[in-house]
Amino acid sequence: ARFVGMDEADIDWSRELRRRHEFFLEKRSLGNPEVNRRRCAFDVVRGNPNVERLVHTADTNLWCVFGVSLEYCVRSAALGLLALGQTVVVLRDAVVPGPGGDPAMKRALAELESRGAKITSTGDFLGAHA
Image (tube, rainbow, N blue to C red):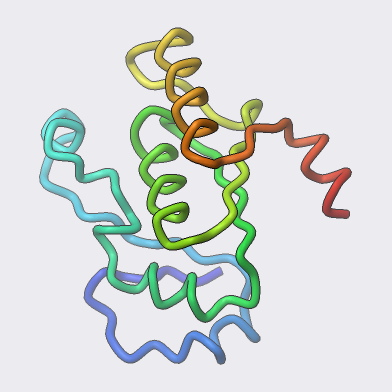
């Protein structure tokens, strides 16, 4: 795995993708979690200039998105990838709701699906892509 900072420049993504298949992408941070939430600091696609270069260099257009919290970080990553013309699959059993709980999670999944993301389970995704 490789950590990719926001301020890293001149990354040879073709070489990195041959060497690794897992990347941790730094997100902008504005202070404590409440400040980050209010100021939308959870958007890694817009917040880290390396993400777009990585996405366009990777030999895929299918991205599986999961994590914490669905209404913020996961939603932003999925929408950012969709805006880059990518195919996005959200694993509904591998996401955790934020402070809004299950009702907010259902709304976020419905929004992502309406914007073009496919919503599925981990098992179904792995079965289809094994």
